[in-house]
Structure formats: structure tokens, C-alpha cells
Amino acid sequence: MDNEKVYAMSFAKVYSLLAAKAEKKGRTIDEVNEIICWLTGYRTEEIEDARNSSVTYGSFFQNAPCPNPDRKAIKGVVCGIRVETIDEPLMQEIRYLDKLVDELAKGKSMDKILHR
Image (cartoon, rainbow, N blue to C red):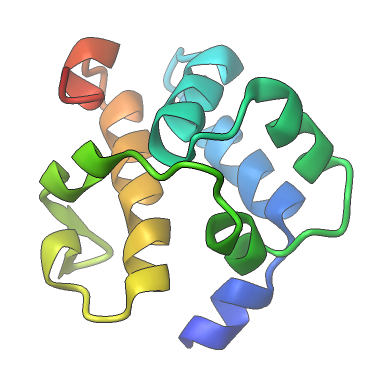
């Protein structure tokens, strides 16, 4: 799937997929929201607002109020690509979230996921 298609996807649709992935592995929506808040600076209420609107996935990340500077420490592979080597900044932001939710689904503790 090309980047523009990913950016144009509904945030609500992608969020539901991420939440389902986490819940399938026994994790919670609250943990998914905590990860998103940590990564982007959105508050939980703002995530809910985005879920209930027509905001795109790309816009959600482009308008993130306070991207966490520690997100640059996120390393690893998502969909066969190392997140730290992704050249396109918006796609890198999106893949950071994918990587963190993958770690959540694999059973890592929130402290380790959020690199605290």
C-alpha cells in the first residue's frame, strides 16, 4: 500500500484495528490510548474526538499537539522495515505507533514500551 493511501485512511478505522490487535492479546484500550498519548501528546478525550470524526490517519499525526521527543529512540522492524531508517517523516511517525502496539501485543510492559 502506498503512503498516500495510508495517510488517507480513516483514523477511526486504523484505531479500531490497533485496539483489536491489542485486545486479542489480552491488552486494553486504555493501554493503546496511553501509547498514543505518549507518542503524540493528544489527550484521551482528543483521541475519542478523532475516532468520532472524519479525520484521516495522516492528519491525526500531522496535527499531533506535542510529539514526544523520546519517540526517536524507537527502534525495530515493522512490516519488514526498520522504523529508524524510514525517510518519509509522516510514515515514520505512523510506523512508530505500529511498533509500539506490536510491542504491547507481544506482552511487553508499558514501562519498557514507552522507554521510560
